Image (cartoon, rainbow, N blue to C red; front, side, top):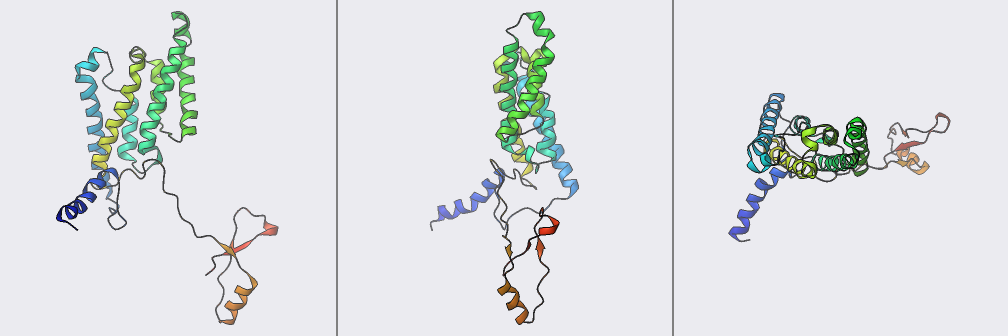
Length: 248
């Protein structure tokens, strides 16, 4: 193997750790609670500050009257920096949930905006409730449930400052989600591990249980060993329980 290949082999773990990839022998130990508090504080502070600096100080977004921050990302910060192992905190849920919510919210608001202004204001409660409800169902169908995204959809129909920017709300939400994700990757992988998965969790491998046969029982008794108590299949009726145990 060449020296350049050796260098890449040593550099690879350093780069892959920042996207949550760990080998079986290099998984970080469970951090102390104080460590979790410190990095949760740093991550949330950095995430919210970055959003304010981008949307609140950029001339591009200021000229288009984009709010300095979307309130739902404060709730996302709680998940992405304080509960990093929760399914709702993983990248698929964070980005996919917010993006879907923004699309649904803007589309529903645009439909109701076709009504006369007075009627539109009278039915704003309906558009807000409908956008939130449809978002919940949509996130569940696509397996991208992210609770703060419900507020993302709600704000698209209820806040004047957000409804005024129209379709621009969607890329703003997408960019905000990606910024939060990048900061979460940087801060959560120093002494912890994030994400647990990117697209889907790794399925757990379970040992199948096989029924005890008469031959197995006879062989065990002839060897002088006492058979282990059988396992009962859960959910079976009391009068017809199946006895199961792992076959060796």
